Length: 259
DNA sequence: ATGTCTCAGGGACTGAGA
Image (cartoon, rainbow, N blue to C red; front, side, top):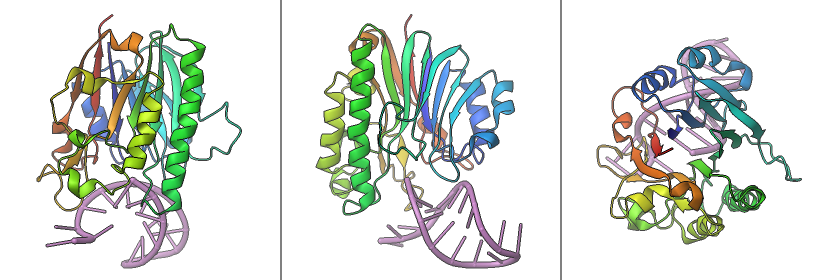
């Protein structure tokens, strides 16, 4: 079984590339971020023609997440439903597929360290930790994964030029601490576990010729609980998807699970 | 060296967000 995650940077602007990618990579589940479309305008029919059901949680202009699946899904959840605080931004969708609880997230970018957006990002990760703790504690015997655009590069190994990025919202100690705090509940960065020595990136800025220079970061992650990690055999980052006409600035990350 | 891309509003370009 294969589960992938991809920040497509607009599902409508990327529709042809998305459908082409699915033909070439017929994964069982594809988690999408930054769909940038309200639910009524999601390209359901095109996705269905490709063999996938689309579970969507979108909003106008910004954010938006979706789970495309070939397999039946149950217990669908959109947003922090068990939280009392406002949750106006569409950044989280959850479903159980093939007996695996799957969470798809688009973590806030945070703009600048000194901005309110960065405080929102830190707070959002705290809320996510609370939410996940409940999910994981409620059913410790269930295979579990969370994937998506975390907007955090876990360590310097995940950054082409760590010194250039150390004070950025993607790499600052405070945000790495927040990510570690989250993973400490028992989640494993499965790419890193299976590829301890590899340097690979999932995002390159559109600006400043970042991709030709390979000035990238690994900020698109798949985290699993230990139960699921035991059955994971490979994680691949599809770097080639950044090439050619109209690429997303992020590329897909593909997890293979033995069953 | 903030150099690109996407969306929305409004009917060409600008601003926001990343």
